[in-house]
Amino acid sequence: MPERNLDFDKIINRRGTKCLKYDFAVKRGYPEDVLPLWVADMDFRSTSYVEDAIHNLASHNIYGYTNLQKGDGFFEAVAGWMKRHHNWEVLPEWHVHTPGVCFAIATAIRAYTNEGDAVIIQQPVYYPFKNIIVQNKRKLVSNDLLYDGKGHYSIDFEDFENKIKNNSVKLFVLCNPHNPVGRVWTTAELKRLGDICKKYNVIVFSDEIHFDFIWKSHHHIFQEICEDYKDFTITGTSPSKTFNLAGAQQSNIFICNKELKRKFVTQYDVSGLDEPNPFGIAATEAAYKYGDEWYEAVIKYIGGNIKFAKDYIETEIPNVKLVHPEGTYLIWLDFQDTGIVPKKLDDLIINKAKLWLDSGRIFGDTGMGFERINTACPRSVLETALERIKSCITGVFYLV
Image (cartoon, rainbow, N blue to C red):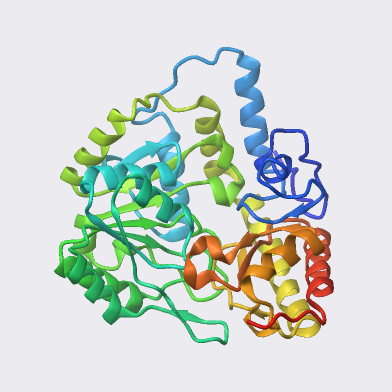
């Protein structure tokens, strides 16, 4: 059966579908007519194989309790994807199904730390990390990434080790590839992080949800860098970014260490969640079994969007820097050379450009003066957004 959903230029009207991206602007304090390029879901229809799988399940018209068991085809589909696209051999005894990677991070925090214990992250980073840590009454520690002012981020390893040692850090939430700065960490960088964590007995939750979107270099799964790392790592993956399935509430978590897995599952059980959503299971299995053609096409299209954005920004908005994206379909724009005070930048973006982006401030203090843009949209929409940015900042300066 041929893939049907390959027209990524087509604009799909998502309004009126209870869509977080489009239908909640006013409730979130934005003008109703803003163009949203914030939350990380796509404006593309997923693979037609997902569409067919959900239609088939819906036509059965019985939506009772669903679960997974060895040999039912689900894990085999997941493992097949990991092998084909990442050369990663995953074992069924490592696997835990969860309704999302953030849910899994929260579960890990409660499983491996106590209230008041320190958890380290690397800001500017995906803002739910901070929220989950603080809401679970753990101590937030940030090993802030180093920015060279020219579009590149790196890790301050000395600070990372000192923060772990001085705060008795128990858990490190690694973002690999990194959201929002787009770094795909090298083997050498991951090994330095891993060796420090091993030295101080720090458990690592490696959020690899964006690992199917790599533009430069090569993605390295953290737990595979060294055999020893498997003993203290929880790896979070999901089809949600890859196949636009965030609403399906389905993630695949891999924990090699039996004791770590036992603690994780025990804490998962305490949450009261039990059987998974049958539509999420059907969608995930279909995507991982049959979605390769769609995936290769969407990678090509989004890669073209990122190149378009880069060329447009360099030519038309030279005082805005595009942080060089190595991974993810999110681009991180540096507005610091515009002269616009960060507190005024959001107002210009929202009320003059009429755009709903993710303000850099929500990613931590080191994100001030930046904006995150989702490029997984028709190119005409991305072009409109960039034109609005150009229009709103031209000739506008605010002294600090």
